[in-house]
Image (cartoon, rainbow over all chains, first blue to last red; front, top):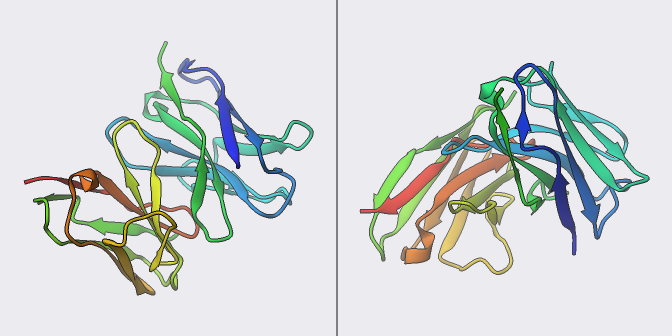
Length: 119
Length: 104
């Protein structure tokens, strides 16, 4: 059974970098079964794709965030990570790590991290 | 960049009703469309994949249809557990804006 465990701070100061990590168990980030990515959801609002990475290292980012976001993976730790630079209050949201399958479905979700951008 | 538009944004219904939610893609996505149900404080739950395939364990009152740019999610005989928000999602993880189904 694939499980995703998120870690990272819940409070980030404006203009700083948001960093979250997702540790994968039950699957390897280094094979082609899944795409690994991040989704966010501001309170009371809809789901927004942030970006994802494939085992080849190729990435795909939301165009509205592309200049500020990096998704990377660490195969030695079986983890993937999100970095979002120059954050503002608009980046305050619940962030989820996800596993996207060949069916193009988000079959696996982390538990979510509420990230608040505030000084 | 493919845009996904859902309608309506809110739908009021009663237990036993049949409801339909529509999702439109800005370009052809063939049948690469999934539907999710989300309840407050929970992660989304997959209902339908490849436009019309029912995910294992999902009740048969849920059904999906469509191809290309127009898709629908239908819930027949609405049950109390179905009051939630529903999202469509295309193959590239773009989501529709969501449809909140609440009690009339």
